[in-house]
Amino acid sequence: MATTSTVDGDVAAVATDRPPALDDTALLGHPRGLGLLFLVEMWERFSYYGMRAILVLYMVHVLRWTDVAADNLYGWYTSLVYLTPLAGGYLADRFIGTRRSLVIGGLVIAAGHFVLATETIVSFYLGLTLVVIGTGFFKPNVSTMVGQLYRPGDGRRDAGFTIFYMGINLGGFLSPFLCGWLAQSAAFRATLVGAGIDPARSWSWGFGAAGVGMLAGLVLYISLRDKYLPGIGLPSRGPAAGSGRGARAPAGPLTREEWRRVAALLIMFFFMVFFWAVYEQAGSSLNLFADRYVDLHVGSHLIPSSWFQSAQPFFVIMLAPVFAFLWRRLRDANHEPSTPLKMALGLGLIGVGCAFLLVAGHAADACLGARAATACAVVSPTWLTMFYLFSVLGELCMSPVGLSYVTKVAPPRYVAFLMGAWFLTNAVGDKIAGSLAALGARLPSHAQFFMIPLVTSLVAAALLLLCAPWLKRLTGRLGD
Image 1 (cartoon, rainbow, N blue to C red):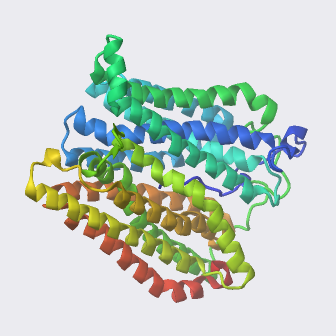
Image 2: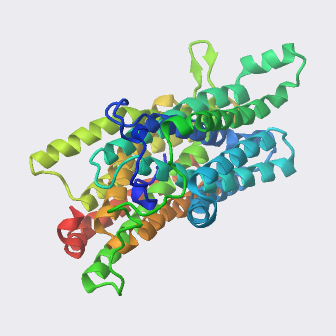
Image 3: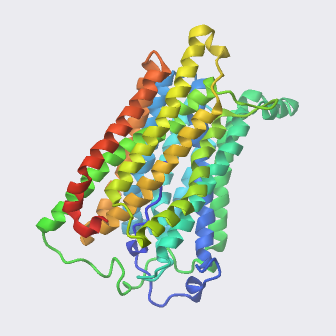
């Protein structure tokens, strides 16, 4: 599933005369404001992943687009969602302010989903555009607020971002169940018929539910921010001691050692693109594969194919604490692998996951060769679920580890810039993912298509493994 930056709360200074509400420990040792931001981000991600779960299916089933056209647009959309926060964060810092930007972004996102619900070709493009713009204003600023909850040097900050990260995945887990059920469920369509409503409008209810989710997050934020987030997101009266804005690194050109560290980061960014290009098949090619070829029967019930989109966030929620414990135990035993080795492992794990897709592809191809495509929903859901499991195992070796790597290795005065570059790997990888899915739609067999991400992932893992000693020399102990 394809993550939020933990760059730091140093992105914006915190006033020195902090309100007492920011220093309480009522929420598992953290300020209660963290719980509010957890819920706000959960609802925003609910809206994003709920719509994402049905987007390609809507283009194919309702707009009657080809797989190639749908996959290409999906790639552009998801890429821009990760690109616009760079501009949104800049505007918030320079002109609008964090608090106001978050509200503007949430309103624009909700408007985008409601416009999508009107189901015309003009509203389709306009709705997607609004969601992209709104996400640009919302996404970077809610993360900044989490960092502003903590004083500079507060050891709770990493744990706070971990709790916040669970909110992202909880929203991503829940939303496909509701939005997918509203859009695809025969039972809900029967309810619409009973109410005298055209059952073809079920997709509108799915998009509308995403908009309602965003509004729920906004209502929570606006009604409770003054109580639990006093002063957070407002312009500070002066830089706090030791904060990122107040404690600038010395100016001047980069040293030779710093250039070596930047080179190591750029190499890691290159490999991260390979990971996201495979991971983001979930919303495009794998969404269509589940819809057409996976046996969706649970007993006598037929589940919506979009429910598979909940698998990755579910596995993140279950496994993230396990990985945190594992890395800590390995560190205590002095056996923790370096960051390049962890990331090579992540690429290898998602490559192994593609092997399960290869089995699923062979099963679908065998069915297509024997009878009509309409009768080929024969693939066991286990194969797709196993891919999602291994993709998350890979994600937990790649994404949070990579974020930490940037903060450790980047020259201090370029940490924010290089963190922005890190998120550009999501944008580039997502665009490649859409193009790869479109290529797969042109290939004669699913097995041939699934062989591509399998090979690219494993080859990239092997190359990164070979580069690991060299990267270690470029970064020294900072790259541990």
